[in-house]
Amino acid sequence: MLEDRTSLVFAAHPGHELLIYGWLRRARPRVLILTDGSGYMAEPRIGASRRLLDSIGVPTGSVFGRFSDQEMYAGILGGDVDLITGIVRGVANELEGVSSVVADASEGYNSVHDLCRFIVGAACALAGGVKHYEYPVVQAPASFDLSFELDDAELQEKLSAARSYSSIRNDTNELIERFGEAAFRVESFRRVEEWAAPGWPAAEKPYYERIGEERVTAGRYGRVIRYAEHMRPLCGKVQQWVNGFRCAS
Image (cartoon, rainbow, N blue to C red; front, side, top):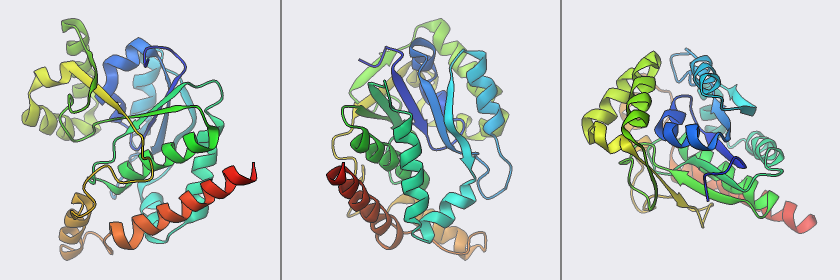
């Protein structure tokens, strides 16, 4: 189902492609990446992802590190519907001839990860007939039900590629410490049915709010991105736009 080359990947940040590196080598889907990975430090890492993908013959799309993380966070805080619908249109334009899209999972960990999954869902709704899957970003690699197992050579190549990606080395080491190297032998996906709903228990405060509060207190952030105040209203307005667009078509 996900082995053919008519798939598309849409990741929130550079480096996420390493989480599904083995499948990328097999399927060679076109890859889109939303931000340049600059975070709050203004140090883009999108070039490293392009070099990695080029080295394994994986093509990239028109949306590839087009936005800084700061721009996306500002868009969420400001409720910038035009920004998000523009990205949705861009992704939808990439879906001609595509059978399935794979995107970051909504885990309540990072607001841009969750927004990435939402954008893909909206684009699939516009295009119609495209299957939407997600893969775990911070959860265990084998969290979801549709799995691919790498052989020894594939696993070692994946780990080597991750360790050589210097700007995410700390993240790589943290994931390996949490789950162990063997866990990354399995790459898992699941079908997204309710694209507009959060993928984590809505009654819980998402991690990005808790860490945001800590960083505002420490003087690193100016404001906290909150699900109820920012993410839910913004996504709700974009969903209304999608519904209106489909009705008018």
